[in-house]
Length: 166
Image (tube, rainbow, N blue to C red):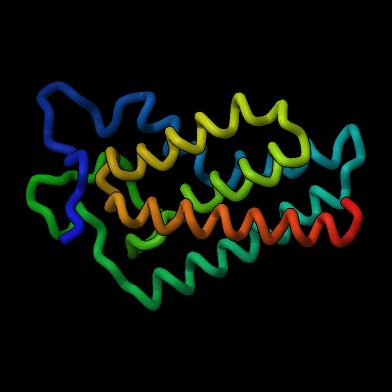
């Protein structure tokens, strides 16, 4: 059985989440990826890359929604007594972790196009994936599945970009 690797237990004197956990959780939300898309188009004018990232992000949102509906897996805090959610959830189901999927896909595409992004995006992706488990919102297998899907989606996006000459 897939159990939470790092259960989020009640700790006296603690708020809902530590700043590092909350920051990593927020970083996986859409505004960060939207900002990265805008940065690709402006001021350098890499519109093809920006469009590919936007399309990839939209397809991933649809894929995550479909898979969550198909698997309808309860989140760890909903079925494990010793786990408490340290952040509010964005939707009902656990698998896959959309935050992790987007983080890995965007990291792969952006660092393949410009390796300078790697120093920021790869550690951030790791922090986002780990935070989903620490926050009690996902099982480790949710994050692993999302990481694999994100890398596959990012690879597909790179293939399309190369075919289009971008």
